[in-house]
Structures are given as C-alpha cells and as structure tokens.
Image (cartoon, rainbow, N blue to C red; front, side, top):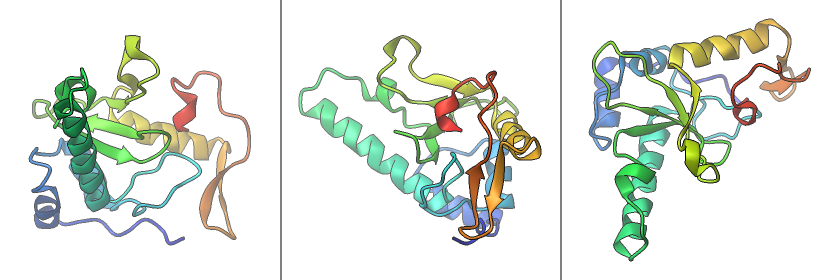
Length: 170
C-alpha cells in the first residue's frame, strides 16, 4: 500500500467538497492540505480516507438514511446522519465523523456513530481533530503502533493504553 496521497490545494478541496455542501472546519482543511488520506483502503487502525471518498460515502450514507425515512421507518435523518457530518475514517462500523456545522475557529469534535448505544449517540471519541492526530502520534511515539516494512501499514505492537476513550477506533 502506498503512503498517504499528497495534499490537496484549496481549489481542489472546494471542487471535491461541492457535493457535500458544507465548508470544512480549518482542522479538516489543514489535514487534507497536508495529506489526502489513504484512499478507500481498510487500515489496521482508523486512518483518514481520501476527501473524495469521504464526500462520496457521506452523500451515499445520507441518501440511505433519507430513503429509510421515506419508506416509513420512524427515524429522523437529521438525527441519524446530519447533512453536516463528514466521514473521516471508514472503519470500524460507520467509521468516525466530524461535524462541519460549526462556527469558524471552533474545535471539531470527533464522533463515532454507534447505533448500539442510543444513550450516547453519537459517541465523542476526541474533542477535536487536533487531539485525534495527537493521539495517533502518541501511539506511534510510545511504540504501541509501528510500521510493518512488508505491508507498509501500521501494525499494533503492544496493547492499547487503558485511558483511551473509545478503543475500538484505534
């Protein structure tokens, strides 16, 4: 598997996100200007997918939720999958999302839409994208993860720290 794709330019980000319809928070723009994720590959840990794949999956998920609501299911699409959610990582389950309906300069909480826990839907994984990236870096810096030279993918080498909020996404 190749390394993450090169970053996107601001005009490329605007073009790719047109179907999404929401401006990206500065943290998200910065991430995709730095690297455009790992395409649509499944990774051994939650790693960003490409912005194009993210927008396509988001539009498709929103369409599924609206179709279910229109078929008579008792769901509110704006609660189940708000239009402003952008999927950053495709795994586990419905991946992790970021809500793009925030004021400029406001931190963007990282959310995990897990339908099995209705009381805390969606679950907050990290308070911001910056904190999520810091956690990923910490896991590499402390040797929990390392790079497998054969597959060129991250590989867990030791157990996850006990203090992680939602271990399933790491």
